Length: 160
Image 1 (cartoon, rainbow, N blue to C red):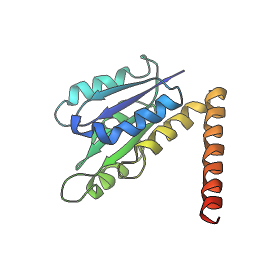
Image 2 (spheres, helix red, strand yellow):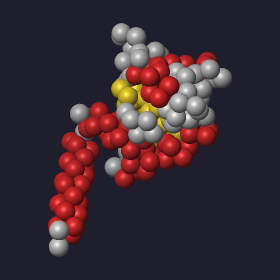
Image 3 (cartoon, rainbow, N blue to C red):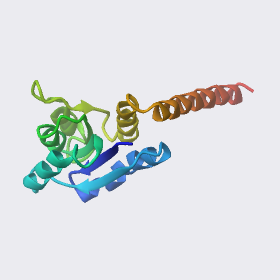
Image 4 (cartoon, rainbow, N blue to C red):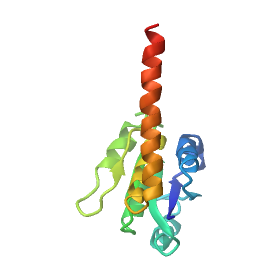
């Protein structure tokens, strides 16, 4: 199975990124976590992005706040799918990061999830990997069925 890279622009993003790691673990998807900055370690971020395919990765989840250029910097150096997670921080509480992540130039796409949307980023990465992995696809379908049952059970409990 291909790995997923979880890349944070700052070690301060670890708490926001943690649900992505937990979701990948729950699905049995191997992952690697890195702290790389588009601005403070641009060469290392570039080198990491260039090595992703050869190192067995299938998708990237990039966490960054404020200017949030990390996802775009990684996407500029790989054709693997990159999922940007804007991190709530600074005076704009993540709006600046959301806009920076979603406004990519034509030809260099970054899929973007909600501010602090780590769990959905991991599920989206899993869906991408599941295109070629039937076992993972079944796991995702089972997870959806479980969520369905949980909501119906909660509805029944509420209306007792």
